[in-house]
Length: 283
Image (cartoon, rainbow, N blue to C red):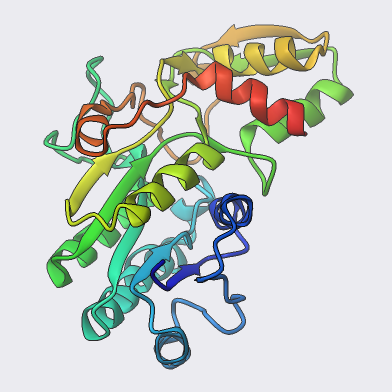
């Protein structure tokens, strides 16, 4: 198999890629630590490209603190845009195919129709804006790239909504959860599988793709499912976004159409609740 390097190896998706790669017995996939592969340090990145000569480079590194990004705009932009630029430049120089992860938060979310790759991206928060700028950095520089937009990512690793709800469900008898923001929870292990599937096919179907699990849920539905599956008795109350103001505005509807990725790669995508059962059984 080709040489593969994963940037952002210690993050949620990076750890899922390692788990899936280990299960598949892949030996030519490398996970350099951030101390050696900081995406803002171009000299360090060049050493990584020189050392591993990657045929494929996967960027899992991102600034994902949606609310903090409103105040840490420069840092969010450095990681999400400049980091993507740095990796794109080196992928071009070393002829490495780039797989870059992005987000449903590039959308405004003001219409209730599943969003496809042709829909206009109009971010309404700094996180979404800097991720869109990162996408543009990739497309401006490269021809051989895959950009995968995903949504509501969770897994056994890192900080995420599932682990937060399980913790809060152990501490409280009642929780209020937003019910008027709708999207699709996505198991990061499933995303890792499709990334490695694209590489295993040595695909040249370059471009922008949407990938999330199948189905639709609000944060309230997601929380209810977490408590139902884990057997936690927590009274869960639906509330409006207006009752829980946050620093960053979030899209009300960010369900993505997966038609393109399913057709191109002939894959079936798991239903969000089925993947949630798998994750909670491992936790």
